[in-house]
Length: 245
Length: 81
Image (cartoon, rainbow over all chains, first blue to last red; front, side):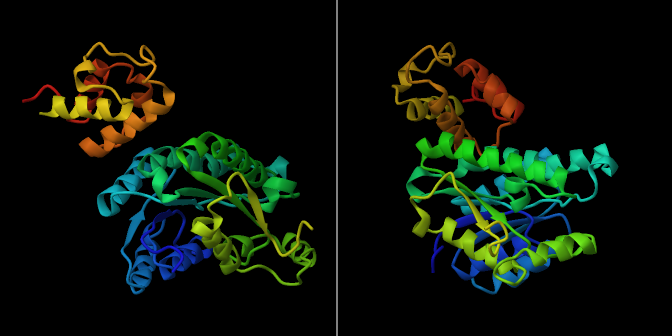
């Protein structure tokens, strides 16, 4: 068990990559606080509890400051500490730049950037330097290399990369490791909502010949969260099947 | 009692004697209370009093006296016996 006696918060865990990360962590012995906007988060918590570890579900919107505080307070109340924060919750905004509403731009940055940064502010205060704590942020290939039709999403994920690199330097003195995962094209509800043209173009570019699955990303998150990665910080790791190779 | 608890928080976080913790003790007026120790202080206060401070309050907590005033907003009376 790579995460025995570790306590983790995983945001956006009701489906897709977040659910895969939470499930993988639970199977590896982690105690969890999971968040999600829909009531499905409670069903996920019930499923994960069968692995024998404590799982607390927090339903709400991380764009709300009060909810962010509640999540971290719940973690402290239930577990008394925090070892791993996974900032996964996000929204995918797609469409031509000229046809993207200002409201959508704000939503992308509020959810993908501001919520993650503000939650991290709270979360690191529960982390102990002695327990090899870490933060894992979900970026995107679009945030490191850009992608037409995804300008706003890409910009928000580029901000996540900048946040990751900067906080890795700032928090190293507290022994908190900060890394990002930049998934490529992963089969989720979010990517299935993309226009057919973008979907087809993206899959054709994947050198390993298959679209990624959430478990591919979860495996990377498990590695980064575990003691196996105790000397790794300030990295953005692509999980993209060679999409950018 | 809470006042003693608060003094203990400052003493532990800053690595100073409890007797040195007065209402007038202010941020960055002693070498022990720098920005790094300030965040350690916040973590200890939050743990001790079971609160989660807003960032505005963390920035505004520039003295022991102000810490008391801020904690009062969260329903904690540091001057209570």
